[in-house]
Image 1 (cartoon, rainbow, N blue to C red):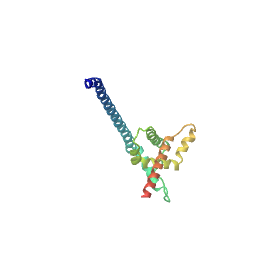
Image 2: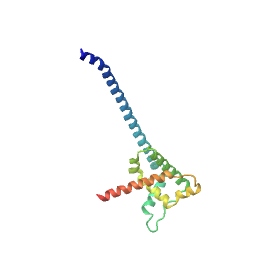
Image 3: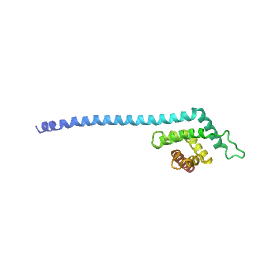
Image 4: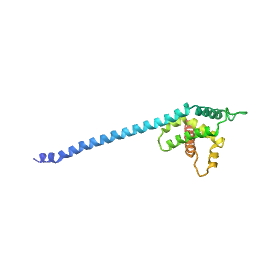
Length: 171
């Protein structure tokens, strides 16, 4: 009799437990789907930038000049392959700034960015610093933050590279 009464009282709780498990399962599934789609978006965004930098003829030429400069600018008698025009460099830096903004907001996969485009980003930043390109843009309009996100991303990649070098030097 007491057992029957307890079973009648606890029966609705068992249904609530099942409903709660069902709702938690739906929530977990939605969360997994959200993270999967977010990761996919980050990889797609990275791939779009990588394709743009590696397949657009103007950017390939600029990248080749910058890589040549990065590899040989300390050599005696070095001359650049070809001068990069103001408009070409501005278009190239606009893409670098877009990459940096996507990274700032977590919309591009940072490890892919670091591993695959990191050297190109750092070479571009070093080239700009050596040729005073970013300062030139800032001098034209001091109130604007020209390519500030690109500069912050380059510094972040540089810090990451220094940590990586310290870690490998300890091994």
